[in-house]
Every structure is written in C-alpha cells, then in structure tokens.
Image (tube, rainbow, N blue to C red; front, side):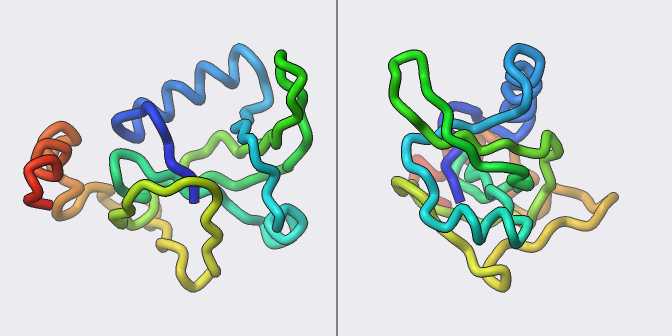
Length: 138
C-alpha cells in the first residue's frame, strides 16, 4: 500500500500517470526505499494499492522493480507499473510512512467489470467527503 500524495481523486491520479507515460516511459513510481520483499512481489504478481484522499481506491500491477539513479545521484527503487488502474472496494486508511504489505486475503477485492465504483460514502463528491472528514463526521 502506498499513499498517493497530491491527487485529490482517482481521475487526477490517472491524468498524472498518463502524462508520465508520454514524457518518460515506461510508467514508473520512484520511491526512496527499495522494497525488502521485491522478489516475492514480482513472483506473486503483486500490485501497489493506492490510497487516494484517505481511501484505498485502486491498484496497479507491479511489472518490475529496478534500481534507478536520480539526477541527484541517489539510487532509488523504480516500480514499473501496468498503466491500468483497477478499481477496488474502497477502504478508509489513515496516513502512514513507508511500505505496508498486504497478505492476499487482506487485500481489498477488485470491483468486478461493469460494477458501479461509487457506493455509500464513495458516491459523495471528493470535496464533500474531505469536508466531512475535516469536521470529524467521517
């Protein structure tokens, strides 16, 4: 699980990633810490689950994990991602730092194709959910 810092909703995350694919393919998420369980993630067909606006909302398959040197000379982990964002059953999650690994049975299930993504609280506009959360009502 990783926090998606910046995007206010899944559509904004999708737009940012589309821009990254065009400017610097393949689609990668760079992170300072190399995952300790990288071999397991790749062997099991692991995914990164994105927390957007306080909820686990989507996942992406991790296709490769490689070392990449940044412009500053620091080596980071480059997670090569499948561009497809797969909607999952939304779950609230408080902010955290670093990696969080999920056992397969603990991972939010994918929403089936054609299912309506927004249900319950998720049907509310992101701004309204944020305001309600700030007021302590969610």
